[in-house]
Image: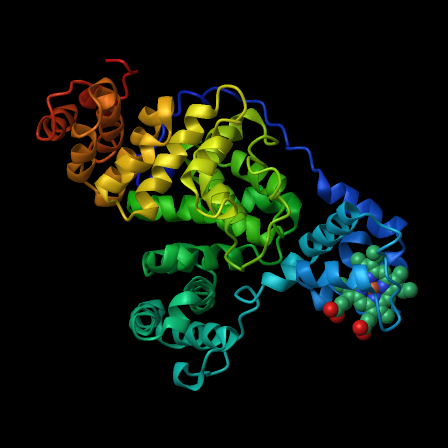
Length: 459
Ligand code: HEC
């Protein structure tokens, strides 16, 4: 089976990252400080926290409480009910660091809703505006009547209930967990009966649960085995969902331990598996399935963690980086452009490709709006258009809208834009003649065929 592009993550040429075998783990930053502070500030003396090997009992057990980040910050600042205030003892930075550390260290217990699934005959009708209830009810449905029934009902509920729609990703995770339990842990069968509804949450839920009880030292071995079985029987699309979902599942399962998740991806069998997996890791990092703020994001360092990860992981990090910058910049394209320009040397164009991908996504593929956004990119307009053209082509599964974008773009960048269209079209078929025909149906630019056949630009 060919291992080529299905989604935006595979939309980039891999030329930049091929052949770099060295595996470095990103340097842990705030996590280490937070861990040290947890001990030195005396938190350990009063609280139980498994990650810190502490067994204090004066305050609540933090593993069980799994408090949210904001709540920890508030508590450490203000103290109260037997806990001293740390406002004068720790700086704001230090309070944040220790809070991040506790959030990260307890994330596993907080997010294991899907993983901890136990069937209990809950019905969907009995749930009202309670996400945990819906998760349980839909997981039950998948467990008792199979994922197809559960997913069909889920799609129906999403259309009729805005609450279910807004909370769909976690519910989809739970359906995956219920299905995996029904099939006695057979990932391949659970995958084959699923769908990608609500950002593939179903697949993520399966993988999240599949890791349950696996020690870190065996993660990579287990990860390799999980998708190998799926890949042997399924379409490229499902195979992609597996390795990509693996990235999401690894982040969730390791409690958002980015270096460990990336390291595990690196140990998958093929480069295709590895990059699809790291794409899932970065995506989960940017926007957690559990509304959890990853400690590998820093509001004042919008390009982090791309700036910190090893070279082999930078491409996929930068290709998605604007999705984390935009919300922080109030969805201002001008401000996001300014941030992209501060990317590390050599990665500025990649950031602008990410910008184009978001321009396509945020405008739901409206060509005139994309053009306007990409113009803001100035001399990087061509990278923006390339990113947008690739995104359009992969989302539409054809190059028609992208060709409209490229044809309307300035003459100097048109060939480059069509090159991107070709790169994605090339993933739809292995036959060079078909590739050329697909391109010729859209444009006379020869760069499209070059992109489709994996030749460098300019043609
Ligand atoms: C002298 C003992 C003591 C120390 C030191 C201490 N705590 Fe506490 N902590 C407590 C007690 C007691 C409570 C329960 C307060 C309550 O019930 O409102 C608590 C509550 C909490 C809570 C729960 C807040 C909530 O919303 O329920 C968090 C989080 C927390 N502590 C974090 C920390 C951190 C982080 C540190 C170190 C910077 C720390 N604590 C240091 C005793 C302590």
